[in-house]
Structure formats: C-alpha cells, structure tokens
Length: 310
Image (cartoon, rainbow, N blue to C red; front, side):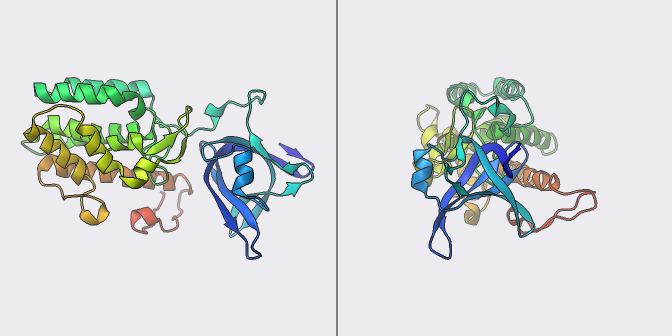
C-alpha cells in the first residue's frame, strides 16, 4: 500500500540494534520479517530509547511507512523522520491484519509431531527409561512443540525445535535398521532430550515469535541447561550417565561445542542426524532463494560452500 510516495510495510521485528553513522548520528537497524522474506530496515535519527517508548522490540508486530532503497544489490526499507514523528508503530486490534499470516511456522502440523513423539515414547521397552521419559517429556511438551530451533541458524521459526526433532527421530530410527545392536530406547531419548535446554534459552512471545536469547542462555548455554533439567528427574545413575553423555556429546567435537565426543554408537548416530538435519535445513533454505540453474553465494554455516539448484 502506498501513500504520498511512501509504502506501508507490515512484519515482525528481529535483530534490533542501535548504530551510529559516520557523522556520529544514532539510527536503528533491524530486520522486518514475514513467512518468506527478511528485509534490512533502517530508521534514521532514531535511538533505542525511542523504540522503547513505542514498546518496539524483537518479536514486535509492526506497521511501517517508508521507502525502498537499493543498496549493494539488495532492497532495504528506509524510515525517515517526519513532522509527525517516526512512522513505525505496533499493530493493534483495530488493524485488519492477522499475525499468523506473517509468522513463519514449521511445515508440519503440531498434532502430527505430537502424535509421533508420543508413539516413539510408548515404544520404549525399558520400563525405567519409559517412565523417566514420560515425566520429562510431558512436562515440556508444549514448549517443545512451539519453540524455535534456533534464533538465526536453522529451524529459526515457530515449532522449529519440534520439526528438527521430528526429522532427526525419523532419520535415527531408519539408521537403526541399517546398523546392528542399536539401542532404540536411547536413540529416542537422545533425540527428544538433546536440545531440551533450548526451552529455557529463548525469550518467546505468546504467538511463538522469538524475541532473542535469555540471560540463562548467555550465562549457561543449552547443553548445560539440558543437564540441569535432567537432574530434576529420578533414574538410576548408570542409565542417567548414558543420557548425560548423549546431551554432552551431540555437537560431535569439542571445538563445535561438545563437552565430550560421542563414545557409543547411539551417541554417534545422534550427532550425525543432528548435524545432517541442521545442514540440510540450511541448504533447503538457501535453495529457496535461487532459481534453477543458479549457484548461491558462499554460505557461512555450510563451511562457506555454495549450493546449486537444478
């Protein structure tokens, strides 16, 4: 929608930060997001204090009047100050806009993932493991089924954490059909608990939009938080040690954030399917941005590799 050479934009705020120009003037930089696109946005002559006065923060659903500017072959939204002030505000109940149209969500319904997780837990053969998992999973099921899998890297959308676990669980049990002597109970437990700490890492709105990281994440991190959560539930120590190892080793290498490398087959499979699904998701996202016959730019989270669409 356009008015007086201005265009109206609607979306969700992320990556909100105050910066300074070469002339030492403050401005606000953020990304405006919908289900598909993410566009760099700049509000000149503006401070974070003014954003706070307008109650605008990461995760806010806003309406903007601005102009499109082309910079380094990419579009960006420019919000200039007018006599009426800064042309950005929160969406309110009088606006005929449905926020669900703008929230990127996992491509699978939560009921499907919930049913699959519960099915796999019901198939756990060891009675002690099964009782343990029923307690811990059902305590956190609602958050698992609504939280993002990350803030920026992969599965960074509503229900992303559950979708990540869903695809991992499918892959893990498929591999258990290939390799002998795999403990399927531990595979199920490892997949469903390896990122359980993330339910305390992200500040999430009631609509399932991430506002950013929590202080607990910054101070402790999701692996350590997962171990802390684990300790609240009773299980024999020898069995709990195996689950601790699954959580502590799922990043694979010390330099990638693992506390220890995988030391048994189920831990190795967990690490591999975690890494596979993360990298596959990044590749899928990049392939959506290009046309057939095109090669992408280098992708940092794929070790600076490019992807080709055919």
